[in-house]
Each structure stands twice: as C-alpha cells, then as structure tokens.
Amino acid sequence: MKRIKKLSGLWNKTDPRIRKKRILILSLIILHILPIWIFKYFPSQDGPSHIHNSYVLKELHQEQSTLLRECYKLNLTLFPNWFSHPFMAALMYIFPPLVTEKILLSIIISLLPLSIFYFLDAVHKGKNLYGFLGFLFSYHYLLHMGFYNFSLSVPLFFFALGYFMKNKEEMSLDKVALLNLLSILTYFCHI
Image 1: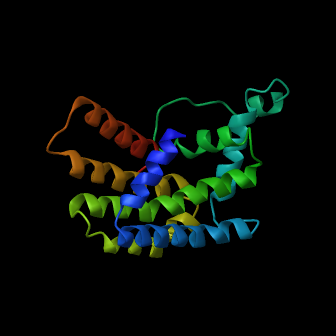
Image 2 (image 1 turned 60 degrees about the vertical axis):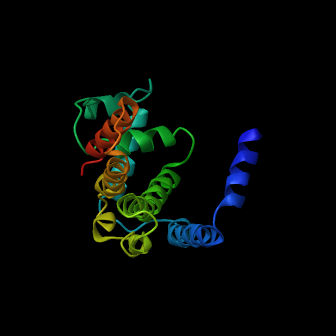
C-alpha cells in the first residue's frame, strides 16, 4: 500500500505535459494491440508453427505423450530464436494456445514504441518525440511473416542500447550485469 501511495505521489509531482504524453502513449498502445484481441487469428506465415512448437514443448514431458516423444527430440542447445517457444509453452499452462500468441504479440507490439522512446530519451533527455514513429512500425512485415523472436529482439536491442547510453559514464557491477542480461535476452531472441 505504501508503494502505491509513493507512486501516486510521484505521478502528481510530474509535469502535466509529461502526464498527458504518457496517457497518449498508453492510449496508442491500447489502440495498437486492440486488433490482435478483436480478431480470432493473427495473419502470419510462421505464427502457427510457433504455436505448435510451443505446444509440443509443453506436452513433450507428459507421460501420455509417447507419440510426441517418438517424433520429437528436445534440443537444449543454447541458440538464438529460443525465447518465444519456452515463453509461450509456459503461458500455455495457464492460457489456451491462441491466447498465448495474442499475449506474445501484445508484448512485441507494445515494446517497440516504448523501447524507441526509452532509447531516444537516453540519447537526448526529453527529446523523444520521434518515439511515436515506433507505432508506425509496430505491425511490420517481419512480424506478419511470423518472425516473433526477431520482432521481440528489436525492442530488447533498443532497451539495451538505451540502458548503455544512460549509464555509460558510471558503470557499476550491477549495471554491467543488467546490461549483460539485456544483451543475452537479445541474443536468445535472435537479433
């Protein structure tokens, strides 16, 4: 409860122009992810194979999945393009497969403009107006091709680069660790 009061106090202390800008950004994000949730399917070329692979990854260790184990072998080699399948497989324990794809797509589409705002703010504090261009590129060609990992790696790259730009003067051990974590996540999303 204290944390909520502290956050609301910080919200009241911020400049009204910044608050209006944040509300506009949040509204645009909601408008951008709305089509994903309105329609049953997202039109992509490789999207269904991501859903299938995640489902197989989730079901592979089940006792009754003997046929799956005959056809598939789990490859635990650490390689790029790895993030979306375990993420969606974990979500499939809670949500149905189509909803997990919608959650992943919502994250991808929301993070692109947010990461560009973050990066631009790191380069020139307060001069991040070009971040609105991120909304134009949210539904890009590679996302419709079904390259979900790559589509997630671009915002992670901008977050990592922005974090480096903000902290390059005073890189403590914990900041280096967080930068490495962002870089590793970007690698596993296949930049």
